[in-house]
Length: 378
Image 1 (cartoon, rainbow, N blue to C red):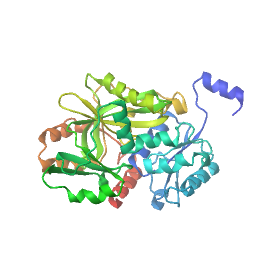
Image 2 (tube, rainbow, N blue to C red):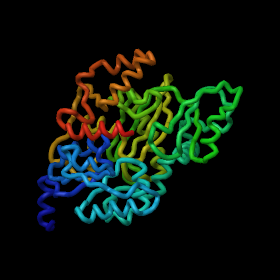
Image 3 (cartoon, rainbow, N blue to C red):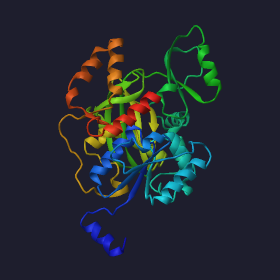
Image 4 (tube, rainbow, N blue to C red):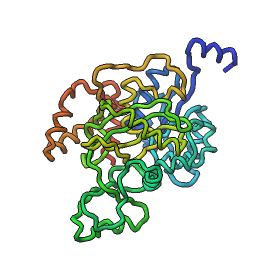
């Protein structure tokens, strides 16, 4: 774009046309982001990519086009080269990967992506936040509240075992021990050197998310979980704004970590808020997170630093806003019913008709279908 046109576009608040590539296009996170960008930045050309061939024909209406990546995500450079080829061919100016496995593969070979990840920090900073063991060690060093790591299998009480890296709830297990007999079922996992055993923290799930630049919070938002699936500790399927009095404390805890790890990029810091109002770090997801729709629905533009002011105003709703991941929210409701958790059931049903769906079957039928096919396949 000529210099005089750039100056003109800045004065009248017009964003020059750009091409954005969003990975994992059948995921609800990718669809939510594509819809938001299409609404607020109508000059953008939004592309998606995935390994699912059917997504070429069955994909969200908010993608201009969806491309198939044949190379599987791997520690080597093959996947990054494949994405780099798409970036070069379609003149992509901004790449938005949405899951941690991809980001590890892409950030490690950032030089192959034609400066499309210019807004993200270095690979080591990402690994400190993403690796649950390293993140726990960081919190211990900073003397911030976090679950203690359990080394003795004769521990008493409840615990959670989770992989060092990854965000899938399928690999997370919750256990209870009376301290008399070691839990032999955990030995194989722990000896593999890939799993972490931590004490279980009872409390309400809350999160502080945003876009960060060199350890500074550019756009931040706090939310609380109402329901998750599976209910033992899975993905957030119903959320709302964080309404407690200690929001500043939540932000301050995040800032304490960012002073040590000067991260640039998206991230969601997950906490448990106990009955005595103590905030305890659980983990960090240094990527676009599952509940990103909640902040976007309430007017937090996480992409403003990347794309500039939007052409249209974001929603600034003052009434209670809750976002819902349908149809998993219904499966969660069934699990809560069988478990007899009446308080959570009441919270889910209350105001259900006013919830905003992450992916709507009426306004985006093919996007919803691609999401359902993804759920069935998994």
